[in-house]
Image 1 (cartoon, rainbow, N blue to C red):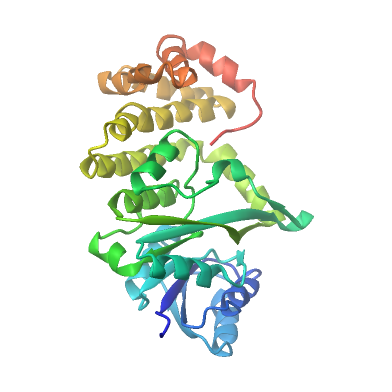
Image 2: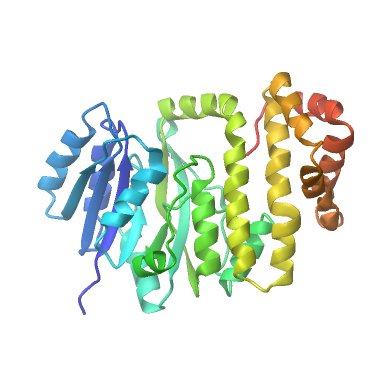
Length: 342
């Protein structure tokens, strides 16, 4: 039987130093019927030239799409989705790597078992140390029965859905549900996309193998550390992403437990995180502006309603109380820590 076409979408911005290795990792996949779509997001280096030279000699189907306006990763991924000809789509970061059977393993699961999306385990590859950080505590140990079960596990913080690059999606499923990345966000856009996809899916499957490797370069790590220290003010984007995902979940489930998580925990957790990151950064001016938002009744209600989870997650509830009634103390306590949590 003829293998169906899989489109691998690679958004790229100033990736000339890494793109060759990444494209070779895709080209060398043991799955034969691949389409590689490189979406250049207005790079100022030779990303396109390097990519074209490799792809033209690869023997693989490919497209190179050059955007005229820099729209960040979400817009580039959407551009790739709209251009994809495949029955299935996979997203690949421009500096990452994968095992040779990455595509074939995910394809076999999604095709043979008629799923809408399939994901696998992944590692963070620290290139300077030639070391894989597996962090398996945030990845499933075993497959779960249904999409609702995956969402409950996420809500209980048993598993994490942070990125789309370890997933394969049925293209018709994405198109039918008009699933695209939010182009007004560059924090938590993957989480919103995945949570919406899960609640709208009829079947989600999990492959235990570690097939994708997210590469962390020294320069990239330095940039990420700076981003942590300076971009905490943009966490309102994460709140909005979670709100939109939560609204979608509420519309498409009758499961009471999951609805309670969405109503009483999802948004409150993200709001509290904004206070925490501002305090850890030592930005008292911004923190005080956040404190003024607590005067709004709706915000106070969203935060204080975490009392519904007092026996299951008492820490979340007591953080809420402290932010409402003792915000200065909360600032002092959190400022002592040197690590910004996400």
